[in-house]
Image (cartoon, rainbow, N blue to C red; front, side, top):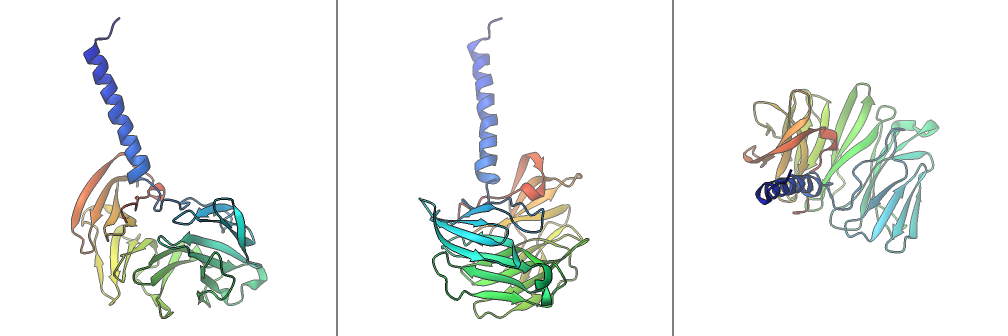
Length: 288
């Protein structure tokens, strides 16, 4: 049976439209939060093992291992620095988005858990000297940094520290350019993803107890910014202070992306062709 040219053209156009949707999802809407950051790390043993992390300009690559972090210059893969961890393990690693510096979160293991000191250090790939670091002490055993939200414009850093794994409980700490460390207290300890505005000291975070997304400003004021109806999770905050949140369906999967400003005004809504696990969802920040 012959197919007319008109019908064949319709079929081809349909295939092209479907392909364009998947390209959009893969390269734009669901792209990693940084062009060269590894977004999935094996933390099944409580630490990252053998993962590669590339700097924003791809000049450096860091490999995190059981007892060390190795940094290589690219191209050529020349080893330029090895950071020996001894009785510590890596729980967090990320290159800054606009310069060749990295943040390294470590926690103690074995007999070294005295005071349970958790450290977030700023790593220069080419310098072996003194590095800026923030030390958190007297934490519950096995506490570790699981996420960091920071802005190079404000020099404010928020650290999410997991203090319990069963059930999951977290604390948030804040530090700034003056190295003033303070714990941010919440009405609950069930906090999900965190993010910050690019040029304002405002923490965006998931309140998992009531499935809302909230903002805490530097002056201590709070506000729920997710819409009143529905369940939501934070996905990303981009370089223009646009907050991306996901609306969850009855199965707990993300089926819609909502773009907000910090006051909670909805800027745009985007329906996902296929519902997704929120843990796998990232929004591209290529417009930074």
